[in-house]
Image (tube, rainbow, N blue to C red):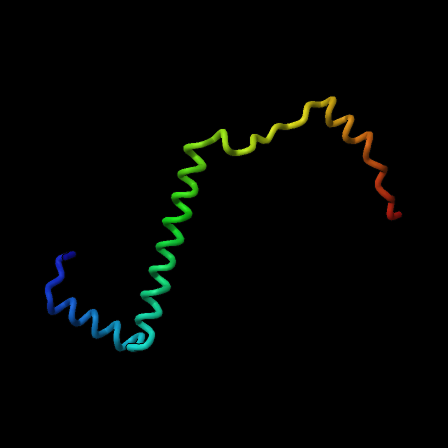
Length: 81
């Protein structure tokens, strides 16, 4: 695996154990697993959104006459000076 022999893998595990401690390693592994699950969930959500474009609302820019009508309904802003 990755060109590592059993001796190198054992040395890496010992180094990790010394750096993080026995109590911290399960916490790190758990948070790493949660991160992978969240990433996969978000990727599947994006994939579903891409596959079904008609399910998303389509934003449409208002025409020039619609913008004029919208501005007529709006009161003038107050001047600060």
